[in-house]
Image (cartoon, rainbow, N blue to C red; front, side):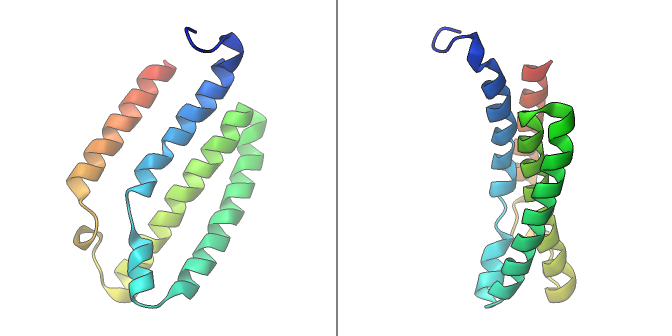
Length: 121
């Protein structure tokens, strides 16, 4: 309220939801696909992510307004990363622990979710 007026409160909620994207952006399985020269996987996974994003955004906007669109985007990005991790695990036998620092990521993710929950309660 010191910098912005009360009319910006809804946009602050949307911004806070989009901040959850940070956690999915700290995982880089796409670089391994590029290293294997398998960019075609990235194309199809991106198409799937776009479809999930559109469907979830349309569903969640009914319940949460514009924040639902942000939630749909966050969920779609997480699903995209999970699909990449699963393909690398089962098709290329690369365990996620080989390219993801699990403990720091989970610590950061837990801290982010706790902060997000605290702010919204």
